[in-house]
Length: 476
Image (cartoon, rainbow, N blue to C red; front, side):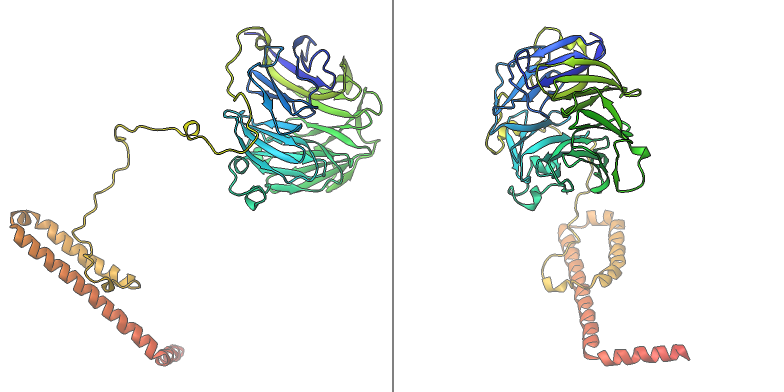
């Protein structure tokens, strides 16, 4: 096994040399170049498991898949989708793929290739998709300024049609006035903080546990990218003027909207002025910041001093930056890993195939530790001779009769030896007498209940008078 390295994945809009290149962040050594995928769409480069890379083509309705240790695409995989993908994301367990095509969200099951659902709640094309760290929810942002948070369970197993309330998003945030360009979700699942940036110069912080906006930081220029360290104490935003600005969460004043002046902001200056910073990433220990923009430069910064460490030149504008901890041996040529995903993606929603989605269990013996249930005894049950003999409202009377019935049962248990010696005719006669006595007691209970109800209905005034007399006597 090779040493574990911080692999930096870089994609640009120029694919003459490669669609995506991988470098060792510390040494700058080239680890791999992935070819034949055309120009990669921003917010579309993802890892499939630990041995594959997937990305969307920026000009064609195609998704490309490469083995981690191979330069060429997998020949057996051809993912043709209904349209050009604007953004995509894969669940942390690599089970589902979510893609944004124009303003519609598509959800696929990767193992079978089935299209599970389509959701159209945005009014303009989707720009970014992000999952929570546990994969239970995901957020989609669009050019309409909306940020929608979805429950993955409802998305993959919809309870109604596409426009029903069951398919509605978990949260809908419409606080931005212009297109949302990037989203970052911290740790904690649905209790995490979500950070969004937009061309309206605002970075907004939301609490996903209750759906409230906690903070809105207004910058002097438009924002294109955002990344936050693991402790969520420092927020880095890429601007349209070629700078990376930072603000510290623990140092902000206690107000919901804060205007950050240019003099207060701490800037990372090194990119070409006027070129937007479209991609940001942090090293594993958050001591280095990686930024890429339209000036075809990838800059690596020291976070503490904000000094430029090195620059990596590319042939086109940067579209994606990702840092992953990977063993260097995984990039060595060798046998290809077995894939866990389908060869193609369905373009229409189809029902599940029972042979693929069901598991048949053959039970050959009883479980020895299962819960043991007592066998029911029907000797003392009601024989059903008179259904009106059971009053529905006489629960108290039945509870009063229960001890008497228990005494009779105990007496019968004491005489079990004698019963065994008795002939069958005698047992039948005794059982009939017990049933008759039980029916008589139930009829008597019903009669007493009817008398009580008749008295209440016919003499309501006398009942009130007696209550008043009791109160007067108590006062005296």
